[in-house]
Image 1 (cartoon, each protein chain N blue to C red):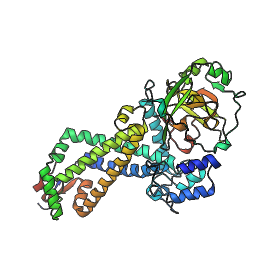
Image 2 (tube, rainbow over the protein chains, first blue to last red):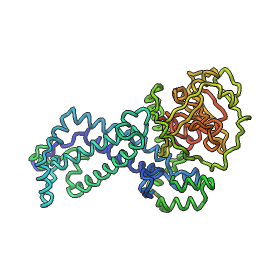
Image 3 (cartoon, chains in turn purple, cyan):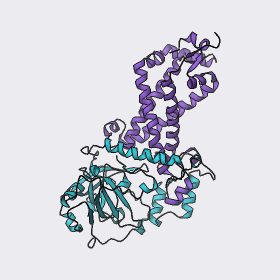
Image 4 (tube, chains in turn green, cyan):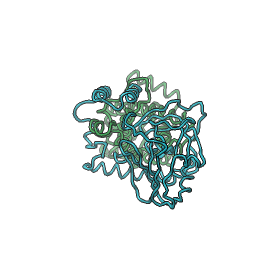
Length: 225
Length: 256
């Protein structure tokens, strides 16, 4: 049965994956515009290139009221936060309740990580559809933890009084600005690795859209849900 | 805003053409379309042409409701030791400090209108006879910066009781005696928050002219732009009146 396909990614995983992707892209782009208004690192002259940012025409807003398109960037940011917030909650609940995390993210052993690194250095590390090696498990776990940190630090920046208890864990309002910045850098780093690996092994992409993968590709890994 | 820009602001007042050009260069402004411009958002009114604009404003109104639900009227903003109070505060306004109106504290009157029983205008001396309160709190600007300061004055809830305001009304609105006729409005729950004061002092000294003397609002549960300076009128109402920055697309609730 060469054309036989099996369900690899259930709809809930695909939908949350893409809403998350859209949400994070909008959040990072509008976030860079918000950053430019008052950079975290005030002693460095570092700004994000305006063409990378989201928030409307920079020249118009600067001419009209001497701001750098901050209002629209904030509107985008506080709209897109719902995409990330909802998809993250849904995915976390699903992941724990369905056993998805236990099956796909666990266990991770040091021995496996070292053997993965060895395979990688010899150019032998595979990327089977649906199966995760130890390094992948760690990367996906990192992404989930990082997004959780982004939501929490975002809540502190948005509502530093109402969420002051969370704020105390990260150095209050000013500390949360650093957490939010480096958390963003972490997510962007993850996305770059994630997309690079997808380009190297393009066959993993269609199942994240259709949900289905050829049985012959999946069977030996035992990854089908 | 960088420190040089603030210094220039304080020295010359406002930005010159060359300042703007310089800032634009520094921010890597590229002529032509940015990705943001492709969305047809001007970020300002924020443009009524693009459907996405209406959608974003709809979510902003939804977020007003979420913030009102998250707001706990009894939860106090964190306070800090007096040693952390900034000796000189950051000047931040749409106009240079030399453009502020010269307000004589002796002839200054605070007008009171709307759903209140006593509409007698208030003098500064009379305001000073009401109970005062001072807190060392963090001032958070929508731009991203924050500073710790100590403001003292009359709790707005005390004042609202004194003028017989209908505290079941939805909004308290402010008008200001400044070069841009600044306006603003807040929800009644935030107006009645214990730390919300009509500030008359900063660091135990009378409010400086450039920071909104004789009276500015200090609302530690709101962003900076929700705390008007040079307040000349207070209006209690059930009608939403928005505010100066809200007209440029900033979220109305602006709660912390």
